[in-house]
Length: 154
Image 1 (cartoon, one colour):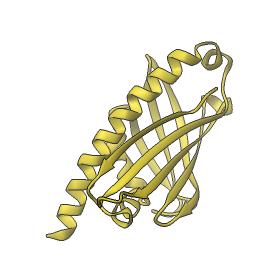
Image 2: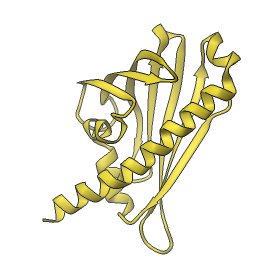
Image 3: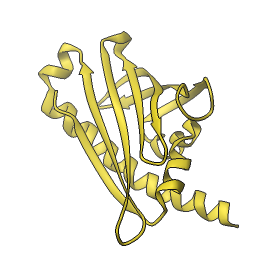
Image 4: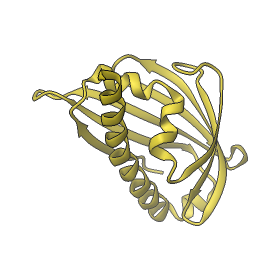
């Protein structure tokens, strides 16, 4: 299946963005519209940080284990996602790039490594649903970053 990428520009620095995204517990704040029941394990941040969540998309619910497998400050975070009883394996990659005008360009790419037959048969619908959900994630991430950085500055 083709990957899905969404992005947003924010006024925060790449270091501020990375610092926020590096903490797994922060992800709940901008993804809880479709990822619920967050349970954390491993370190709070960096490689090995892990969460198990319930994903509700397209009328379906499934448990997903999200684990950080690569972290390159302040440029990139890669998560491995396992769901559908191991039949779905994907990577979620946050790329963090400075903008010439200040601020940061954040992109998130969801790449399927292995997908259940139903996902493959409905690939256009699955991709559209993921793109829509992750566009919402990016907008909510921008809001949460502003709150986080503002609170840290006060």
